[in-house]
Image 1 (cartoon, rainbow, N blue to C red):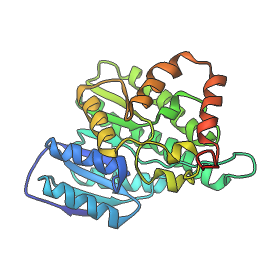
Image 2: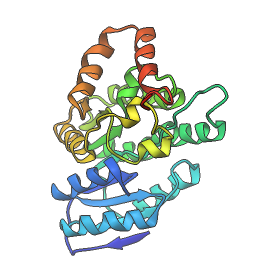
Image 3: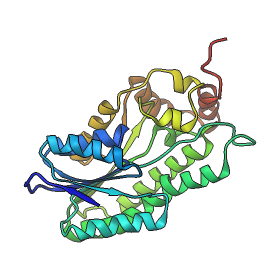
Amino acid sequence: MDEHTNGTHRPLALVTGASSGIGYELARQFASDGYDLVITATQQAGLDRTADALLAAGAQVTTILADLADYDGVEALVAALHGLGRPLDAAALNAGVGLGGYFVGDTDLAQEIRMIHLNAISQVHLTKRLLPDMVARGAGKLLFTASISATMPTPYEAVYGATKAFLVSFAEAVKSGIKDSGVTITLLLPGQVDTNFWPRAGMLTNKLGVGEKASASTVAHEGYQALKAGKDRVVAGLPSSKFIGNVINNLAPDTVKADLHAAQAKPGSGLKN
C-alpha cells in the first residue's frame, strides 16, 4: 500500500480496477469533485499513473495492489481500507474482465471461472464488507459497473453476460433491503466503450470489437452523475446503446435478443470479406 498526500482532507472514495479505462476515468471524476481516493488494480505501474493524475487534481491517493479475483486479495484490500482510519463515503466497484468466443470448444474454463470470481463473487464479497459501515452511519454511495450485456443473453460472451446479469440482480436486491437507510446503490450499464476490454477479451474480429465505441470519459461522467444523484441505474455511452438498453431489451424476448447479440459478437463477423 502506497499513500500519496497533498495535505488535504476530503471525503473518501474507493475505485477498483482504476489503472485504466472506465475505472481511471471514474477516479478522476471523484477527485475533481472533492474526494480523496483509494485505488486498486493488479498493475502497480497503472496505479501510479492514475495516482499522478489524481494528485494533480488535489486529492490524497492511496494505491493498493490487489487481485480481487482471489478471496485473500479482497480481504487484504478491506484490511488496508480499515487501516486508514477513515470512513468510506463512496465506492465504485468497477473491476471486471470479459471473454469472447465459442463456449463449446473455444473458450477456456479456467479463464471463465476466474471471470466469475472477479465480476461476480468479488462484488458480493466487497459489498458484504463495505456496506454495513455505510448503513450504520446512514450515509454512503455504491456504484457497480455492470454492462448493457446484463439486459440480454450474450452468445459468444456467454459467461461474461451472465456475470453482469447476476450483478444487476444482486445490486437491486441489496438496494431494496437497505431502502431508507441513507445509502444509495447505482448501476452503470455501458454499451461498447473504447478501452482495453476488447483485446483482453479476444474480441477484435467481431462487429462489436471493430464498431463505434463511446469514450471511457463519457461513460464515467454519466455513471458518476447518476451516482451523485442517487439514481437506480444509467445506460451509458452511445445513443444506440441507450436505445438498445432502455427500449429494445425491455420489449424483445430473450430468444430474439440472443440472436441479435450473436450476429454482432460472433468471432470474425467484423472482418471484411
